[in-house]
Length: 179
Image 1 (cartoon, rainbow, N blue to C red):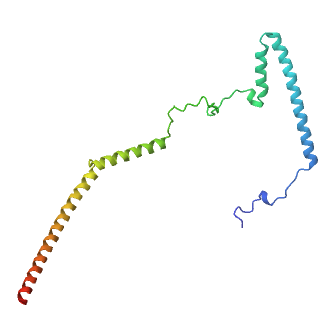
Image 2 (image 1 turned 30 degrees about the vertical axis):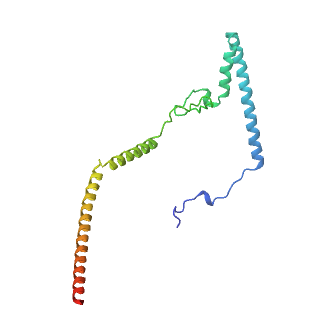
Image 3 (image 1 turned 180 degrees about the horizontal axis):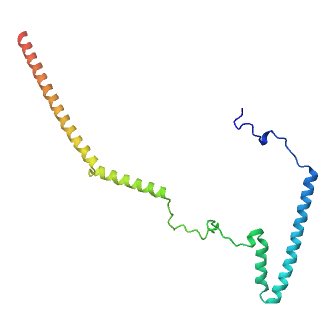
């Protein structure tokens, strides 16, 4: 049995297509509706123009600007004025307005990376100067190793001198016995 059971799904159904005659009829009806809307807006605009001209003949240009802005807005936009606070308008700057001397604002990651790099450099300077705990421990270890190597070198020299003395004594004995 399939996963979903015996429920019907849209996948097994036959497809229905819109006939070209129906599409033409829909297109004609839509064109007629748009023409009627435009005629209605034209009549309303003419009535409003007559009223505004009777009120103030001197300020006709200001009223026409308002009407143009209302005509441009379609649907609900013309009725309700909504401004999205999250929408940021793109402001284009001219080349002359761009200030090259202005300090560049860095992102948080860039600032943290620069701070980390500076801290590492400071630590390395302190380490080379021998002021950090790790540097002090390293220097103490190096001093101990130097002492051990000096002692080992001194012992080797003593053993070498002892072997040379034994070899010289053996040669002296050999030379005496040959004579």
